Length: 461
Ligand code: GLY
Ligand code: MN
Ligand code: MN
Image (cartoon, rainbow, N blue to C red; front, side, top):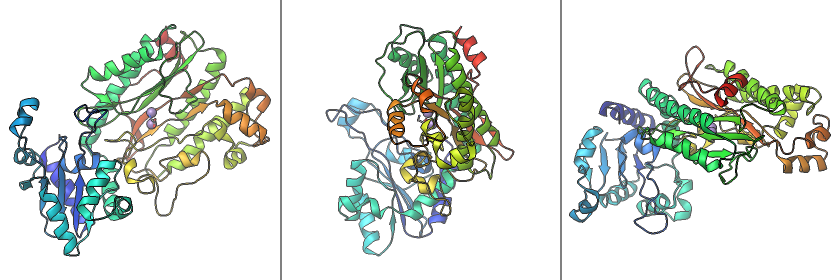
């Protein structure tokens, strides 16, 4: 937790930006796996945590933009609960830690919200992403559950994005720590993977490294020899000589801030020549993108530059042909890079994705494209100093996509399908690192993880 002034200042700015009515921010509740008292790992709502700092479940915060009043709603533990959980600070004590002196039992929240609505005031709330939030908001605001989402406040969303998009020095310090743990997770995986291991054994090394730092995973990790499947959570394969292993994982540090990195390396000590060729092209795209990172640069353009680098590089391998500019303008590079180049990162690994990509990654002038490839680009707008982002180009050989587009004769002038047929068993490569945009350009977060072919092979050896 930061000092109480941090939270006070953030709330004051939010109140000023929203300017009228009441802001309601719900903290998260526990979520049950299979019976009521068997919970998933608790994760606080990030916007609640950003403005109210607390990581306890079942709390809500109110900011009255007209009177300036701030209040936390939540219940002190009963003696029956203390028997099981041990003594916990009271709501009053918790509130003091984040600069708030007014608290009330959770049941009182409904009275306050109902009175505000009866007085004709706006109650600003965020779009829910869990069913329990939707039901709570429905009960508080007298709307049908099915109407709650459309009643979310765009004004509140924009005001929160304005603050959370620009990371302060104290946030960047925490992000550094999270990414540095993340880097160590990847170094451990690269050092300890051997032919004959199961993917889940590598996963265990990655997760153990996070746990040894008191951290959790910032998202379900991807540890797979089938890296062409973008969200591949299966880890039951046995790794064998000749396989390429894609590891995408990150830590969420105690502070709540996240890391998100990917490395792809051979299960053997060395890449095969075919693997090295494609790896170098993905790395060239990664490096070309990093060189462009600076305030004012549109991330969509950097994404397209990565696409061009990959398309151009694959010509030498015989997989692509024709004019690169025209090919990328037509979308032919999406045979190989179907994903976006990166995304914002903060307390959420895809920061603020619950608030909506139109507000976080795009602007009123620059809307997200609906085209294959670009529709997966979460961040398109110009970068600003203080943004924290990922850069994660990749080359993914997806047999089903090859079959479909070949049968449709799609991009025939740009893709050598006969040659590509020979790569159907290749898999996928992604290289991902995290950066803070500075006044001058960008700075990589966390320690360096081997990335060049020579450095990866040295580590594997
Ligand atoms: N870990 C998901 C991503 O890289 O965006
Ligand atoms: Mn990732
Ligand atoms: Mn990522």
